[in-house]
Image (cartoon, rainbow, N blue to C red; front, top):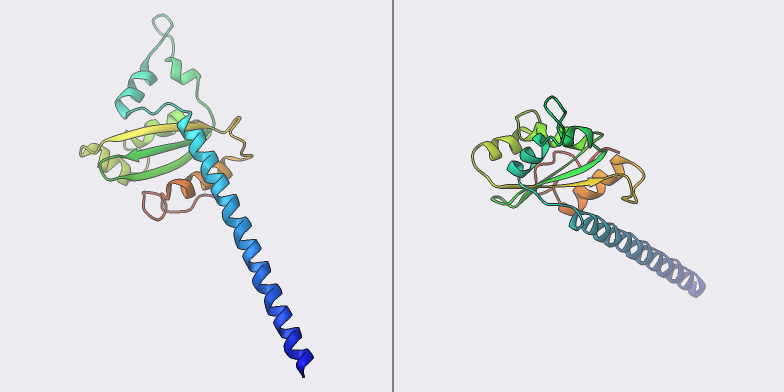
Length: 162
């Protein structure tokens, strides 16, 4: 009977150690991803919606030339920060500039647009998928939503696409 108690003790101990190691690796990976996203975001330009519209409409060509921004659309994620309410919205797009524009012209997230329309202050950051280290837009978006906690305490209604 004593051997049974010892065996149960060993099995329980193994389970506790296994769970602790798994938990440790999960949170270590999570901290790594958060740092990576924050590093990507800190190495990008942070602009206001007004600056965004100004840059988007700038043309470096002659009359009838498309704006520079229309020729430089890219796949990636964008981070909209409402500094008035300390809330984030994270989204993804194959054409980030077009999608950011939609949010501030009433064709995106309705809550973001309403807050912007009624005077809340916003900033915009955009991260290109290319050279981000993430394989898909879904991975980059999901991890950015987690990093900025925009599902639990922001504008996002989901944790991102799977």
